[in-house]
Length: 131
Image (cartoon, rainbow, N blue to C red):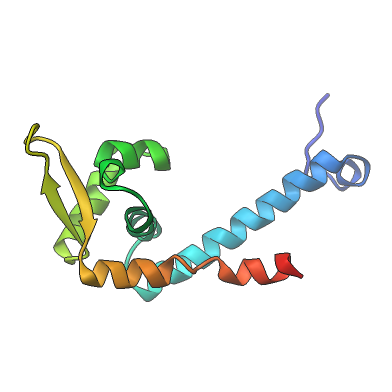
């Protein structure tokens, strides 16, 4: 029978179990930090992640399909988030001249400002790791 990594006996006996639990805790910390950052900007966590992604990636990767693959979400879910970012004037669409159905996303000045600040959301985790 396989035992859960969350079982204290497993954690005491196997380094893999301790690593799994540590990763889960780090993941939870990331979720909380990202959620706090999103609330501060009146955006959802995925909208913040999209802004950060666009800020650090080339134009050819800033398409709905690529974002859906990157974040393991449906195109419809990403499209809904993009519509909100467009309505808040944080991103703009740049239509592909070859395929007019396709477009890339770029940040507006306000979008860049939010993405730059939001991209530091995990910095509070780095300090303990540095120590």
